[in-house]
Structure formats: C-alpha cells, structure tokens
Length: 410
Image (cartoon, rainbow, N blue to C red; front, side, top):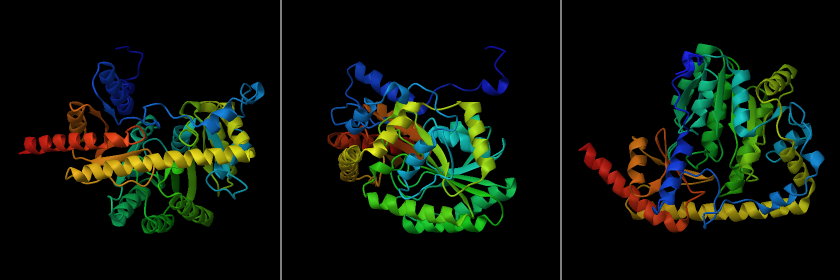
C-alpha cells in the first residue's frame, strides 16, 4: 500500500453495494443464467430497455451550441434554479437561497459542508439510500437514524423526538435529512398525521437551537396518487414559511427527466433570504465542483417555455407511473399468494422487503437467479426494472430463501 495515502483513507474497498450487485446480475445473465435483476436504480420497460423520455430528448436535440458549451455561473443559472424549484412549488416567485448542484447527491453534500461541523451527527431515517452513509463519512460526520414507520404503522414520535433532542443538545444544532414523500427505498410516504406530528416536533425543538429540515426529493413524478405529493409539498411550504425551522430541498432532474447522467440538480432554501448562507453555498460550489453543466439548465428552461412539451412530459409520467403501479401491485399480490407479507407501495422506483440479515438473504436469492440490494433493515427491490410477469417467480424465490433462513436458525 502506498505510504502517500493517509491512514484514515486506507480502509475503503471502493465498491458501491448497488453497482456491485447490478454488475453481478449482469455477469450472471451474460453467462446464460435466467436472472431477475431487481438492483436497478433506473427505469426500464418490460423489454428491459432503458427508458428515455421522448419529450425531454426532443428538446435536448434542439439545444444550440451556446446553450451547451459556455460555463454556467458558479452558483448556477438563477432562472434554472427558479424553474426547478417551481416544478415543486409552482407559484413561488423566488427560490430564496439556492445553488445548482450535480444532481441531488451534490445538494446533499453541500448541506453537510455548510450546516454541520466535522465530528457532528447527521440524522435521517432507516432504511436509507446507502450513499447517505458515504456522504456522511466523506464529511467526517456520524450518521444516526430513526426508524421509518412500518407499512400500516404509525411513526414512533417519542423515539424520533428523544433521538433528535439528544443530538441537538449535544452539538447545538440539528440537520435532519428526510426523504419524503416517495421514500427510497421503502416506496412509501409519511401519512398526513405523521408528517404533521413530525413538523410539530421539529417546531418545538427549534426553541433549543437551530434546526434544519432538508427534504430529499427524487421520485415525486412517480407516485401512485399525485395528490398525496401535492399535499405533502403544501405542508412543507407552510412549515418553511413559518421561519422557525430552516427548510430546504435537494432537487434533481435525474428521475424526473430520466437524465441520470446529466447530473442536474439544486440545493434550495425557498423561504430563506440569508445572504451569508447564499455566499457560503456559492463558495462551496467553487471549492467542490466549480460549476454544473449548462445543457440541462438550458433544457429545463426550454421545457418551462413550451406548453406542448410540458403536456407530453406529463403524459409520459402518467404512463410510467401506471406501469410502476402495476408492477408494485403484482409483486404485493405474488408475495401474499406465497404466504408472505406483502410489499406496500406509494411511489418511486423501489420497495423494501424487511430482513434482520439482509446480506445473507440477498446472497441466498442470487442462487435463485434473483438479485437485490441488501440495506439496513431489509433488501431493496427495484420495481423500476422488474416486470409484473416476474413477480410470481420473485415471490417463490423469496419464500424458499426465507424458509432456508428459518431452518438455519433452528
């Protein structure tokens, strides 16, 4: 090992669990194995082809060289940031404080640089998108979790409160990442009553010290019932407008426009006008990635100005939302037909199958030709890439593996 690498950076294996499992599934398929690849984090059609939204790509092909090649401003094109914010809150006339970022991940990373000190603790819910842990490690932070409500169950408000208050009192500030609505990886959203109870709790805790609620949005266009998304955003807006808690959002075009590789997003605090925060975020942009790609910014501005393109995009979202609903319902029914707990789904690309030993379960499933992603508290199943027709086979494989686990435990 090179002595040039500092000791603190010598223990990583460099592997991402999601991409590792996907690579294993692709290798097995290439070797002739009949595979169900449920590791995917991108939308595939029923023929296994990568979904690209035609309405988006039609506009992309119209971009001129000057909409692609020049540097974008360090903090991003303000018109782009506003347009992206308005995709979530259409009648806002300002994004408050915000910067463009390389996808939602870039937005998350900037929040850590500016809202917590190294050695502090970040709070989120479990299960969570696994890169959350990597982001915390890279920022020299500890990641602590509270449990996401079980399907059909209520939020454990007492536990959430005690954990949040302990962290807040210990370090004098609280940053809470909340991936709601359309939570990855459970595929569920908080109920209205749970969400409002949470906001009430954070409001009370803000009397102790500064509290930031950072909303991580990615899958809002793929909800079973779009009205539930609108209702949630309305609640968050009202809460942000109070000003007691700093409310921000990580925004992205990756899933909304199927532009995963464009890395287009933003970190916004729509109900804040604090100049030092704006200047700090801009400085972080310069010191981290300098600036973002101009092309996706130009694309969103074209979309905003083209009502026919907007209608076409809405129709495509409705189509793929319906397909995801069909897949989720097929999987839920197949699991129940095998005598297993179902997998309830409200939105997004994934559902989670609970497991006390997700790593072992995922390994057993590979022997059945089924590939999933092990995570804290369960395995993530990408319905974005699993056909409804494959649900019965998936459910049978899961039952076999769970029976093997039960036998081994005896």
